[in-house]
Image 1 (spheres, rainbow, N blue to C red):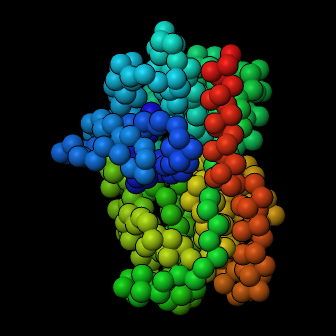
Image 2: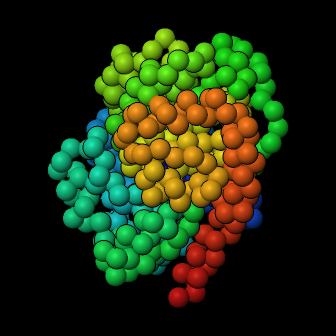
Amino acid sequence: MGTMGIPARYGGSETCVEEISNRLAGKGHEVIVYCGYKGSKPQSKSYKGVQLVHVPCLNNKFLDFSFRAFVSSLDVMHRDVDIAHFYGSDTWPYALLLRIMPLKTVVSLDGLTWDRTSYPIWVRKALRLTAGFALYFSHRATVDSKFIQGWYCDSFNKLPTYVPYGANIDATDPDLTTLDKRGLRNKKYILFVGRLVNEKGVHHLVEAFRRIKTDFKLVIIGGDPYGKEYESLLRRNANENTMFLGYVYGEDYENLCKGAYLYVTPSELEGTSPALLTAMALGKCVLVSDIPENLETIGDAGFSFRNGDVEDLARKLRFLLENPSEVAKIERKAMERVQNYYDWNRVSDQLEKIYFTLLCE
């Protein structure tokens, strides 16, 4: 509960829910995922063995996720379930609500969401004030970053459980027809994937790309369903070699990742980024801002630049475009790191163990 649901069409939490729920259903567990919708209610009732329950969205993004978590909680009270797993730091009130029922609650916390500059100040203050509540009002709180885990422990003297995100290794070549229909050449573009909101730092990438002379293209995949102001700003500042593809999913998305020369994450605020992990799992060299969460993810299998420093980002872009041998070294390391630390099967097994442990308490 608390995400836009599956199939994943929004962000990292949805990707995680899809990967985990499919695996749990494959093991014989009965799994329900609550999905948000706008417009007419979808007719689909299941996806890859997972039961779907559809909940209407609000247009206000600061109320929407909380509203759907509340409606989902009311619905789940009437179902025979054992575990209610919420995603989002602001879902702790509903975990507390469901503790009156004979079921266990888990809350997966976001990163330091109150630092998101795209949020109004009242939202940021409310999130910061209540940051530690999920640690005490749910049966178990999880985080996807060891840095974030340490922050919660230092701040509230209570350790959430570290459960990383994952990615699926795929070393096959891209289907070039996906690239051709978008006017792209294999290994001749730089890629960003993610929500187009201020804290993702895409404006730094757009500006840095303007400062370098290259025949490479910059490809930006993603958007923001709640507003277009930031995307409009990016489009105004981008040069003629920058392409905005909007939302891309499935095989087309994977092929566009595989065909990229370099993947860039310029985020100012992040947890463990599933899009970054996916790029690494597909054998991409990655360049990330040096915030602790990104550095934790890449280890020694990527490059970094100073967060918010456009000139340093431009300098690193030039270096990587001019040194394909360095890029090739990191491509191999990236896949190895994902295989060793970010495997979805191990993540699924870890969550399953947490669920069983809670039921035995």
